[in-house]
Length: 188
Ligand code: SF4
Ligand code: SF4
Image 1 (spheres, rainbow, N blue to C red):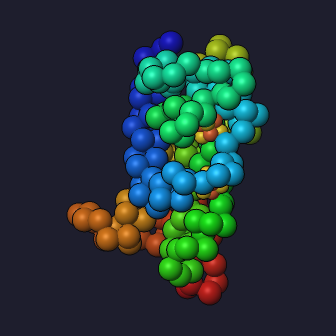
Image 2 (cartoon, rainbow, N blue to C red; image 1 turned 180 degrees about the vertical axis):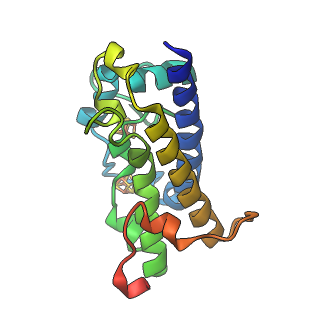
């Protein structure tokens, strides 16, 4: 792996962990008691064909190996701390969405769900970072584009944290959220 690729793997992992932590604050109370989990082997399998996801997972050394029947799912939830397919962040579960207090919070949650998918978009032509299945092609990704998207995604995450009450030195900018998903007219 080139030094540049190694760098984006580690930056992606740090960002994925940060999104995961924030999502967990919102979702854990629902997912920990859910009887109809939305995980599926077809999603887990994406990690076996994507060199980028494989690099993330091998760096994080999950406690459990991939299982042909259950994928990464365990009785305590997903065994992966990083390297989950981006689609795993894009769920919109009615149990969670309906429990959010207002339309602002629902919009913030929607943006949060798109942040991990966002950073890998158009990494090589129109292909997403995790859709590149050839390691040689992975070395050719547009690193500047990735860095720019990552910066934008961090800005949006920090704005959401701030709007949700976390201390942050910089005031949240709504444009940082609208860049990820346009803000509904009713909230402007
Ligand atoms: S997101 Fe919803 S459906 Fe999926 S595990 Fe959590 S509570 Fe269950
Ligand atoms: S969250 Fe984990 S267990 Fe669930 S589908 Fe994604 S990779 Fe599989």
